[in-house]
Length: 181
Length: 359
Image 1 (cartoon, one colour):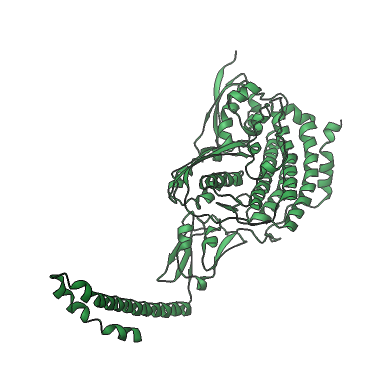
Image 2 (cartoon, chains in turn purple, yellow):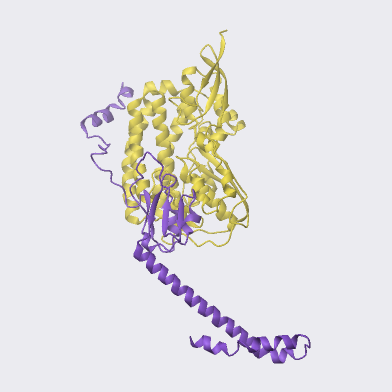
């Protein structure tokens, strides 16, 4: 007889206790802190490096550096969090809360604010100017070094000497000027 | 002598959790032959290895299966770590072992529920899944995913479990152990359940050996194959014996899996007791160059990962041999001579994971 009563205890307990399931939409679900629900981006911190694009296993992220946008197709995203671990600025985060259903598979696009874009453009222009100046200086230095080296090196080589001599002589005085700038 | 007829079974069938098609040759309500055909959920995951970076591929390998996901990820990263000669921190080895055992528990509880559903014991089915829910909550709290953990990476693990979390998990597991003990009685002592399981689908030890059965399916027939004895992860430091049974029928398979639940709880307790402090991962430099066969014990049995790289970020080859693939010949053998009404239970007793098999 006892063989038939194995489940009775559990059964009676289940009858008098509250259900273990939640009345879900009315009672909101509670997720642990670590739940990998979806990816969030702090777009103004993003430097559009594109590491997330290259690391994403389903290739669901698109970054447009010129337009300052970061686009994710959330229906392709597998919420693995690999992009967040690769992000150098730590502006990608994986947070609780699952992707909600939708009628259309639309991608979410995040755009940098105009101030940030302006700032970035200004910085980029600054960087470009600096780079150009540095390049110029380097070229001038190289030319100066070449000019210093030519008289000794070029002397024994007869045909090259006349051509090489006037060329370095010209930029040589420019070198100190570029450095001053 | 009755009329011989062929009944198609699956890929869509109420008792089948996953798509496999069987052509059952029936004579007088007895199955005389079962011809399987697979290939309904082939996704070509293995060939992705030539397109993706080997670090990215961890996430693809994990998604081979929805239930033994952690095992796939672990098998793949351990194979890569062997090729690259990476020695992972001890804490990472222990954490992987704890997660692997939690994953085994959730898989076995899922299977017990499905079995109860197959022999028509609905309330037992819900009871099993109710217990499983507590395991899933633990997994979600520690890894962030309920079935796809995504905590493995080449060189270690990405998330930690602190001592407060581990001790809380142990308390939950003590509670879960009591609950499993209650349902164990129902599965193994209830008369109606025994009538559906005892002597159904007997596979002898010799037969199981010849057909190369793996995991609890083989262990129920008396073959003590348990890859955990090899000592990968932290299993080498833990004390356990493979659970085997000699009867080889559906009842023995059920018994093996229930007892493995207790074994898993015991292994987690041992691992939590021994877990050392330290780093979670080591930095990995370079690309894998070489090949390796990794054999690990998944909830369903032995899985084999063959990985071959040639010093580039994209590997040359990944081959996954899953336990269900090894168990399908055994299934066809057990189906021979079975009652037609027992077919659903017999298909379930190998714990089929067809998505794994077809990758």
